Image 1 (cartoon, one colour):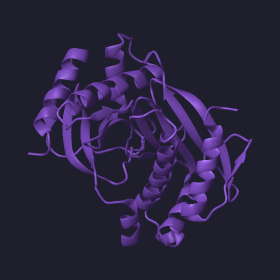
Image 2: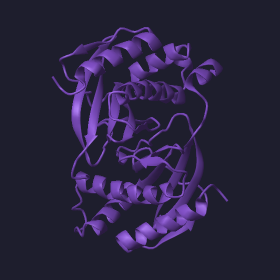
Image 3: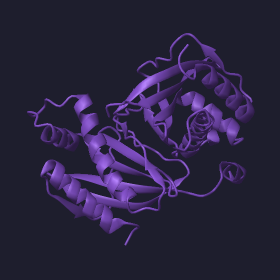
Length: 151
Length: 158
């Protein structure tokens, strides 16, 4: 069992259910997006007594569906900034929940969002935990990275 | 004059000259981001003041800066080298800017996007955009500040 894995599963399931009314479940298959798939990645930094990052990598199509539910719009009406806003908020909530497990004082940064194939690149950080979830036939991934001791 | 514009220009100049021995010059207008060629790095400030500092550069300039920083031959910079170089630059500029903002606040580790897609910061506004030239190529530093409007309120307004 990876560190925070139980909590990541619990928080992610709760957030997606309460905000989007969607059931998401952990899957053992790893989220490895095919090259042609557009991936939207969101991340929040935690700094203070504990330093690291919480990231959410998600197919663009799933982020668009999430935004359409969140803002009660049809998928055609969802503008790119609302898709980023929705993913940023889901990332922010996940990071905020995980922050409560960490030593105080810690600060949560603003969410950052980008379209990517490789996920964010975060120099000086190492992957602590990564959990893949399934929702509506799509996979997405929540990762926790910790600042390396030597950075 | 934009928020901290003079200081951002000063620190960027200082970092480029001390770290790289490169001269930079302010340019008018806005940096035109290419959909395929721009690399972005950011650090975030959290605490009493909340926002982000983003450095946007064309990949050719990233190569030049990385080769200079690590004394590499042209074309020899790896992706890891580029991550370290841009991360270090944005960290140094961000650290200097943080010192001007209200305490207590903390600086995050750098975050990079390499594939031509800009980093987006939902719930922020750009308060400062500084456009520069270095080694004949343009680059920019942008300062984003959190917009104090709770998400639920924004949700209602859509």
